[in-house]
Image 1 (cartoon, rainbow, N blue to C red):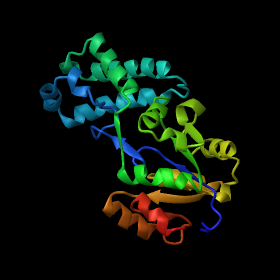
Image 2: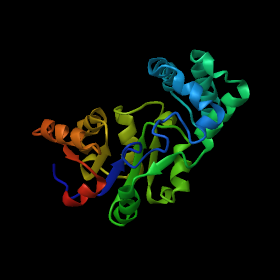
Image 3: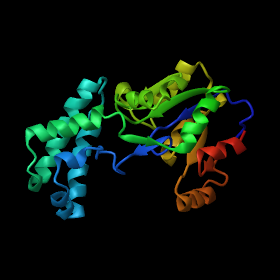
Image 4: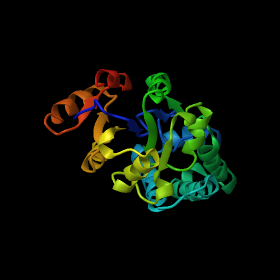
Length: 240
């Protein structure tokens, strides 16, 4: 991998630049304002997992969600499915609507890693930056709220494209908007399949493993595979 002539950096969002404040992508900050916490926690983990999985299968089956209004309507359906699987919660339509509203419109539902906040402004001075994320339209407002959106010249969201990574369209849209050739860009993701998808079309790929054990494992696995593995975004500075 030659990083001497890099002109652009493409970032995944979740688990690369930010993470959910509650530790769960579908539990927004006000989740337990509309759901009784004790009741929820007394339900078996298996049953809760099944409920989230069935609701996730629904939302992931919707290829195009292009506005926050559409996102809100689909997440109401998400929580209806979730509620039907967990009748013990006694969720009414009002609470289901409030859950969806908080998930879509709460611009502080994610926390940005310190290294992301520190590095993005400085990287923007030298490289063109892009987001390439499997997400929904509300993600843009998360970045605006954090004061980071203006640093990105391309913001590619799967629900707006109708496909998700590792479909090559996700990367190509960003490259076209940045007017950059694949070999002049690097892509950073926490999912190896997404990294390999970018590598397949000639983008230099870097797997970010914030978990130390995961990092050590993939550092060994990556030998001779043509991609690099880092533990934090600060490790990028050692590659250039």
